Amino acid sequence: MTMDIPFTRTRTPLSRPDDTSLSFGKVLTDHMFMMNYEAGRGWHDPRVVPYASLVMDPATSVLHYGQAVFDGLKAFRQADGSIKLFRAERHARRLNKSCRALCIPEMDEDLIRRSFEAIVAADHGWVPRAPGTSLYIRPTVVATEVMLGVHPASRYTYFVICSPVGSYYKEGVKPVRILATDTHVRAVQGGLGEAKTAANYAASLSAQQEAEAAGYTQVLWLDGVERRWIDEVGTMNIMMRIGDEVITPPLAGTILDGVTRNSILTLLRDWDVAVNERRISIEEVMAAGRDGTLKEMWGTGTAAVVSPVGELGYKGEKITIGGGQTGELTQKLYDAIVAIQYGRAPDPHGWMTEVKTPVEA
Ligand code: COI
Image (cartoon, rainbow, N blue to C red):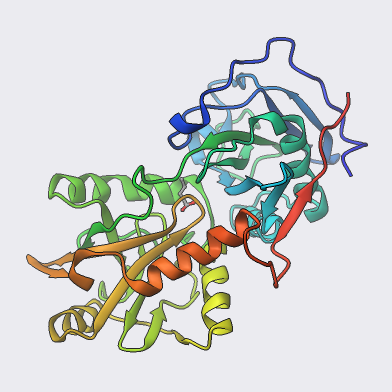
């Protein structure tokens, strides 16, 4: 239901790019969802409006103290032309969880979900049709109080913007080279690691730059205390197959509760694959790499879905995983998730929800 969310249609629609030329996040659509918060009044005025710049006073608190959270989910064009969201409810819940971590007032979860539907309905013509493409939806909350004192702001803006995207990697699923760092840390327990907040991405940049300079694609993050327990890879959760068991670090406060992570663990359990959410050290992984029991490793996230790891570097040593090729289980997981998303396979867990289109002003 989007009836009670007012919609102001743009008078200057943009021309849409060719579906087959899409990369990630460079093209934005015609509209945005917006809602405001003010202490004493709560969240109010949900609306879909033409996409426009946000005008901010230079003293707006988010620009100084970083009270900013976001999430990211996708809408998929189905073979019959309809549009479905992947796990919208879980993304809405996670956005509120991120809000709590940053002292941002929570929103009604049903309204968050409807905000996704409202913007996709408004921009339904932007949901691409070419294989491997989707509409990436970026809900974001920022503090908009104008003040230089350090305290939770009294005003916030929630907006949802969208970008038609191609598959994250041009050639589809392609193994990446990752470098474990023990000089930088991304998050510590008690910090913000499990929130999807701007600060975590800012904290990742210099290590990412160093990894790229050394010829790697991504950083493998170790814990912030002992610097030996594996946390995550780049902006994705990490999983590996050692022998016949899939191991992934537990949700213990430093990593994001990835929606793709959860979906993949669910599929693996459906398939009776042994799954162990436990701490795993970089030494154990390197040893498994040396003795040949490390069969596959992959990152999971909304943007790339599954990203195979072909090589791991640590303290000057390099380990090639699965001959540097995409592993069998990695490919099977990617194919299974994508098949559910595009409606080519049954959806036994009810992950997909249809967006009714079009909405009228
Ligand atoms: C993901 O979806 O995997 C991410 O977290 C990347 C996103 C920040 C672009």
